[in-house]
Image (cartoon, rainbow over all chains, first blue to last red; front, side, top):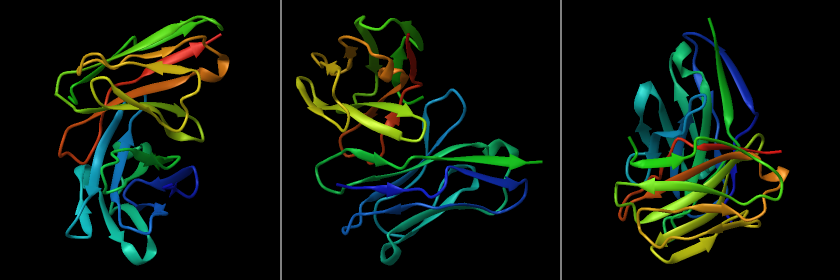
Length: 114
Length: 112
């Protein structure tokens, strides 16, 4: 079974600082990879996804992530944090076969200090 | 707008009562999913459905029942609610040929 590891439960950065949220997955076959964001009292919104092709993917709100097969990683970054980025972030993976189920990491809360 | 609506948005019920959470979609998603979100666990899959009348268990199905007689509706029933089922429940949809799931706004359920 797939597993997704998001180290730590909380990250705090200063406004304008680099945001780095880590995600590692367990599959030996490159899966489809996703980052979702959840703002307080809301549902999940897709930030970006990797399916095939270019390993550096750009998403909404200035976020990007790089798929590294050798490291089984899909870390999320943003060069300059904004106060509005404060939210919970989930990494998720989906097998490329017919199974459409997502496996989520436990999530990480991002706080942005003024 | 992900085409997924959930009702009610908030629900308080007592232990032992039956409660049904509704999920309705307008985007012709083929697949539909129910997740629960709990602190420290992320989202865990309860049940999913590939099409009308086709459902399957996810990671944490015990205590839950689903049905999908119509493509657009995917209700989740707690037959006899327990306090451990206090959680936020999300419904999601996935279209044929799509990669990402689209999520509804969630239902916050409290079992007292």
